[in-house]
Length: 183
Length: 183
DNA sequence: TATAACATGTAACTAGTTACATGATTGG
DNA sequence: CCAATCATGTAACTAGTTACATGTTATA
Image 1 (tube, rainbow over the protein chains, first blue to last red):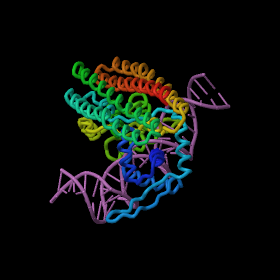
Image 2 (cartoon, each protein chain N blue to C red):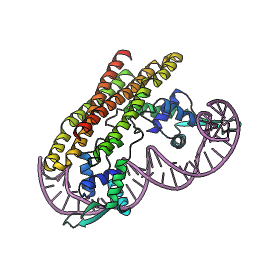
Image 3 (cartoon, chains in turn orange, yellow, blue, cyan):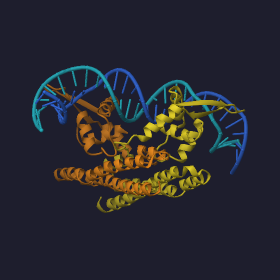
Image 4 (cartoon, rainbow over the protein chains, first blue to last red):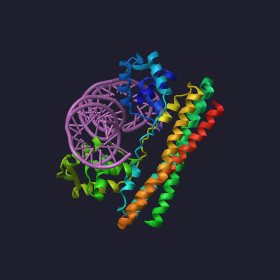
């Protein structure tokens, strides 16, 4: 899957491996991310498959930048993937729920501490969704009006994150209240 | 992590690898799952680490059942994990959002088809959360009253799934309307 | 004076998936 | 008669993480 994310970013403009990591963290970070090392190994595979080409840009006192460009066949591969419907649900893994599920014999305070800590983490994340990425989107649209549709979809993914955190916090409050009362 | 899920199930009662898969699918399936093969390999590692022991139950005309029991050291390992706070957010991967993010140049109908298909998938999942698991929890509590606290937490995890699907559907409706109007 | 940012990559490892191998019994 | 359920496991693979290796320049 990372393969497609990388092709997607390269479709907008050439990137070095380092830049892909940065762009990804700022944009798809909350629903798709990767470590720097995995980006480099995936780029290597994409090059081997002819979906991407790269050329070095010499630099002094630093390793040469290696700029990656999507090829025609890479563009087709991306397009093919984009047109295919997603026919099943993601399989999510939520560590907190796993722990909670088996916590019936833990004491009340341990569970409440756990839940309250989560609440603070999600509260912070919720605030991030409400501010940061919107600015970024506005900037891009101002400078490149042809990305207006793209920006609408980016905003939709941001909105997803915001709603997700909102509901998470609501659930935590509900659950904290339940444990306080019935446990 | 699967390691702890398995220890958690074995804490309730002995299981064969096959039964762990079934129990997991019915209970933690929506926030933690594993393939049968991974369960077998993880059980093997747990045995090697002395956290679990197993003994075969001979059967005719079928491979012997191998019943697994948690050891004292396995119990301690589980307990240690349960008492530790979860200090960071899960890193989630949502394929639909990744695809949507890069779909600025797709045509309107492709995107709407994509979103409507997702809506039907999540609608079905939402219905599942509202019925199935509640029955299961009620049965257990009726037969084992000492699991009342456990049942409260199981219900909380079910509720999470329900809320999650509800918000997902709300977001899909919002996004479908946005695409219909502005794209 | 230390640490963050810039910039590349490989090696070893853990986690998880898919495919293979085997084979009887039960229900539709 | 065919598919599902019961029941075990290994092998080969893909995806992802952590650790290693190298080194400069700007900033706090």
